[in-house]
Image 1 (cartoon, rainbow, N blue to C red):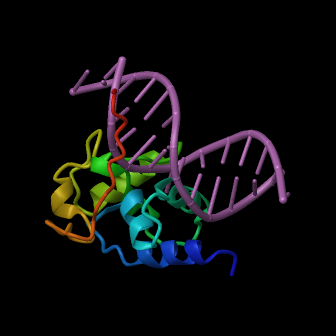
Image 2: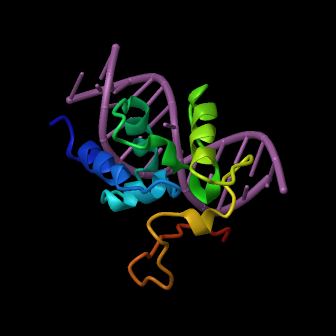
Length: 117
DNA sequence: ATCCTGACGCGCC
DNA sequence: AGGCGCGCCAGGA
């Protein structure tokens, strides 16, 4: 296959159940590349497979993310699945998938802050 | 192999 | 609270 990464991303997105959403970043992490959120977007962009619910992949914090006119379709689909979608997906934490783990010692999201001497 | 682009994310202004 | 800029990664030309 073209890329292992791509295949993983697709397989992951396919598991997102109706009425639930996930983020580019989370998918990237699940695919084994925590910093490749943008790359996930690249994959979604090419995705034409109806088995892949790409409309359930949104931006961090509930932002829609999206692409051109498809953004509108995305909103429709999400609403059709019962989600409350405004400028951003509301109740995000409740419809997020997979269920966000709390106090996860293995999610050491690095915070590389630049100090000002 | 190299360069440019982009359905992202997050710190800062 | 919102917008801007820079960093990250994989794809495609």
